Amino acid sequence: MKKPLRLIALGLALALIAVGAAWLYPADSYLLLPDSAKPLAPLVKVQGEKPHPPGEILYVDVIVRQASVLEELLSFTRPDGADLVPKSAIVPPGSNYQERRRQNLRQMDRSQKIAAAVALRELGYKVVAKPEGALIVDVQPGSPADGKIEATEVIVGVDGKPVKTPQDLRRLIAKHKPGETVRLSVRAGGATRTVEVGTIESPADKGRPLIGVQVEQNAEISLPIDVDIDLGGVGGPSAGLAFALDIAEELRGNVDRGLKVAATGEIELDGQVGAIGGVKQKVIGARRSGADVFLVPAGDNAAEARRHAGDLRVIPVESFRQALRALATLPRKP
Image (cartoon, rainbow, N blue to C red):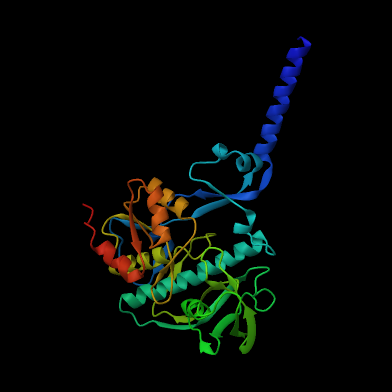
């Protein structure tokens, strides 16, 4: 082989090695990928449940994995429906993947209990569900709250006014301007203390003050019947609406109208449906799984879902009761 040809061959070989290394070598970013929507009925056991007729409630999830260097650099190498996000979006600074995973599983457990309480109460069961404040599940490093309050503590008051729900917390903090200080009553281990925390402006919502915490409903819940939900290793709170719908289907029937109903949304103790992440991937997963309709939190989530829904019908909802009404108006599938 002549020298120029040998140099070309060597160059091609080195290029292939470089591409292969870039494909295998992990980057600092992550990919959000669609996952198939899955039926809940086999995973939800309710005392007194009825035989399940045709139709099903589906929950949707997002696959999260570390991107390769090649996927980070070249968008066309990423799987269909994927979004590239920075590591900080998956694992906040000061945390690690294992702790984040444990946190997501705790969120899933709380979501199941709240969904069961909401569904059973709507069906006429006597449910004891006492809201007891805003449970801190994460504190953003470098935020005003960092070093002053901790995850697992419960905020029970702001400026001397009681906080029973996360909505109470947001409403009371919103009375301040960014940069002002709020006085929080925080409970941990049976004792309550008062701490002053500054606020900063939300980067996504101009003029809205934040203290830098992620919270969920803390509540004492007692159910009149046994409800067991087992999704294995799936974490996060976004399947709450789907859980509540499936529990209603198991006990009352005719909720899904014989359709394949995919649903997503964090559910609150008062039945309100809150926004979630990964909507693009979830609607793609629902569409690929042959869902007939997709219930999604109203607002930005619904607008995002419609951009990727194709011919899948998107139904925006603000509450569990509204979701039931919306499904009841659909023609039953023959």
